Image 1 (cartoon, helix red, strand yellow):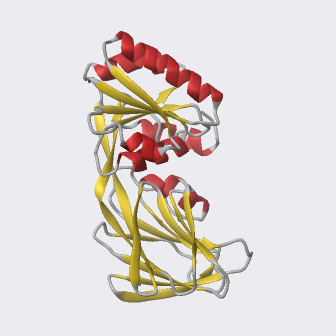
Image 2 (image 1 turned 180 degrees about the vertical axis):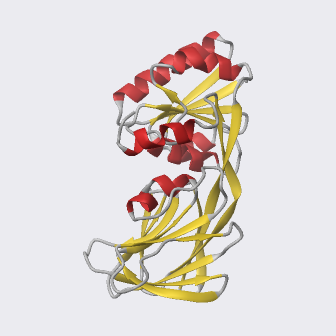
Length: 276
């Protein structure tokens, strides 16, 4: 490792303090380091070309921003948890200083996660493409009224949801909003796609686990404005008739880990109860 980037949560003073401590540690090992707010992805992208590793200092939200910033590069990420749950993080704030040198020396293993690609079409024209590590959500906007979402799978109509929205989630996202909406938990390295309605009313209420190669199209019908959310932090309004096609992204997120591969399952119940 010659060049390392550190993302931190700009509104968390402890995150910034820990980031500076890690910078000092890395510099003492002869490593070039840059620091950047996880909310300033464009600034970070300008520094990523020669970066060998990214440290994400914060919680799962900071990791989601870090993962989006490095796309399309597959730079490994080490998550250092200063948040609450830390499903995606690897090191606690207390152990980061002690265990980071081992990871830098080549210990550990690579955890590769699937991402989603979402293409937004408005008035028949593709406007934007996004990549998500957790989920793509089509939901109601500021007005507390249900929306209608027509769902098609591989070009064939599946159903019309009348609901607060619909979630398309990765295995990584299966422990997030999808789980809160009643979806199942998938093996983190799984490539399957989840389709989960949010509080449906007189329409299908079950979650679907779809093969990795599936393409899902969600079309909004709502007299009032709906919302498209990518990983919870890229949010934009959706007009009536807007369509989103969701499928597996050609990109992946790579995490560098040092804890045993079964740690996810051993700590799952503890994390679901909101304990660190």
